Image: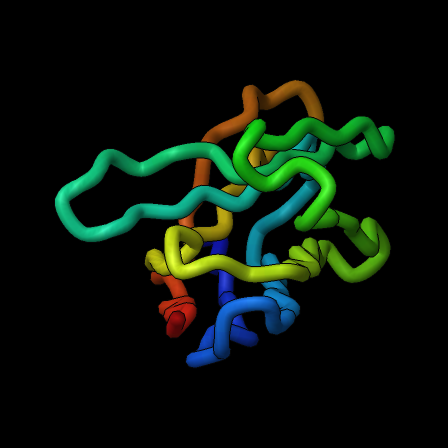
Length: 121
């Protein structure tokens, strides 16, 4: 089995910063990419930022210039540095990883339990 454990959420005032971490563990042979998604109340889950094993990144337009995704491949860990937070960033943030459990096996998506980020105005 594969587990993703997020940490670093919390309550912060607008303009503040938070850093989320997500560590993947278990039956992992290779991780192709990791990403952060978020889901606000009453809204669909949306991609916030993603990073491939080669280091390529992509961001939602709403967070470009404020959020930075990075990864430590040796630790199977992904981070999300969130600066200049806004009340509209309030959501549950979920970690996602595309994991292969063995050589030649396809990659499957795994999800963390989510961590709450609340930005007060």
